[in-house]
Structure formats: structure tokens, C-alpha cells
Amino acid sequence: MAKVVTLRLTDTEYQLYARAAKAVQRSVSNLINHLAQQKLEEDIFADQSEMDEILGSPELVNALQQGSQDAAQRKGAFVDV
Image 1 (tube, helix red, strand yellow):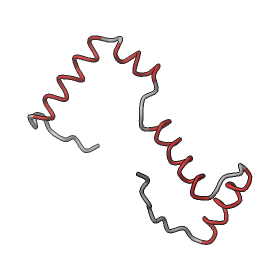
Image 2: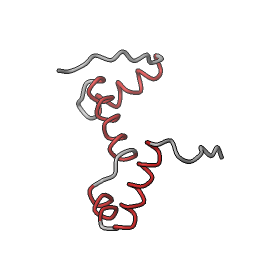
Image 3: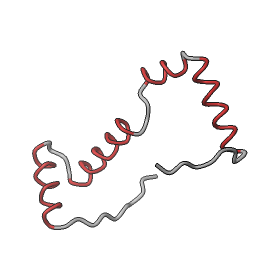
């Protein structure tokens, strides 16, 4: 089921989204949802070719699994750069 999220925009921000939405024949809500989804997919999640490259390296997979186990056991230290 869809969820409702409240988002505060200044008048200037709203007008910017409204103009962009009109240009691509979307509602403001749909445009914001589309842009947020696109940003997540591009910047946060690995695409299929990246996953294939990761999974194709047994050494990297082992290192990731070991790191995950170490984190679960709270081994190591946080390094603030």
C-alpha cells in the first residue's frame, strides 16, 4: 500500500518542481518520487554490472563476508577521517 509523505518546500522550490513537472507531463508528486527513486538507484545501489564484477571476485566476496562478520561481532575500531 502506498504511503503518504509530507515534504516542505519553499515557494521558489515548489515553482521549480512545478515547472519541471509540467515540462515532462508529470504531477509534482510523481516527479519528486521519480527523481528520488532515480537518485537512489544511481548513487546508492550497485547496478547489475557492478554486482557481477563484485561477485566475480572470490577474494572480494570473502573480504566482504569477513568484514560483515567482524562488524556483527563489533570487532575493529571506527576511524574518523
